[in-house]
Image (cartoon, rainbow, N blue to C red; front, top):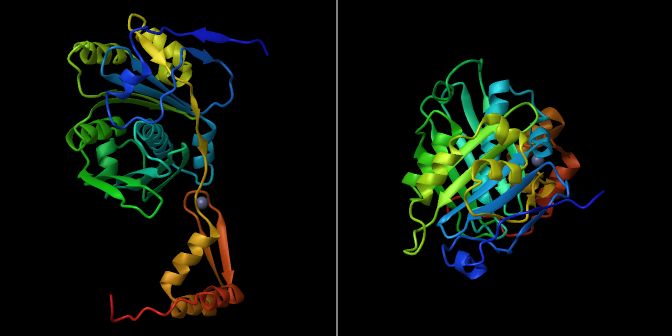
Length: 330
Ligand SMILES: [Zn+2]
């Protein structure tokens, strides 16, 4: 394969240090002036900055991750679309956070035909997604699908540390609107998000404004937002990041960073299911096995089946040598 390198503008006045000084929630920044067109993955996240402005952004495209996440369930097309958009949004937001080894979980909880959309994206951009619904999902508006719903955002550090959770009533008639409203009202970070999804891919772009520095171009937020607003669904889904950014912002000093790969991965395990059964208690587990011969737990995200028979159940509780917790004490 021939070497294809697309040159990107670099403003010599902008330094790595300067960008880091703009805000606390950046992960490691590697200076990047060239984009290697390596075609490693169809599923990538690109970060970019507008030099000498407080604006940063990401673009994302998901193909394999999106298809794998949805392949286990025959979702109505509207829900596929909504899940794809929420997946793209989760990757865009996760990349703006300092997650260490944790995960960002976005949930839309509804009381209409759509009960739940859940997307989890880890710090290393491994994703999983699922949805629950009832009745017919057809031509309803997004608000009609959700009814009186809530948007829940969770930052799970996955290390036993404090989990952050924000729960707000849903405001907006699309996933991008809901997220923008949440970010502006609850997190006080000006954020614009564009999302698109078709049968094959989900894609998105995010622009975020960090606190202004006095010497910076203070008009840039309005200007880049105006330029970004011209983006079409087709451009978002089809164009490579560098082409998209050149098309939208050709007069701006955009610096594009190395892409990060995204993949589907479910974090379910037999150990987690075992723990869940232990919490259920020996009596309950025994009675289910008595009735059905075994317990089968299916993962909503990846459809993996975990089966426990009588012997497994006995081992489950026999192995638990920790002292029994009194039911009257907390
Ligand atoms: Zn799973």
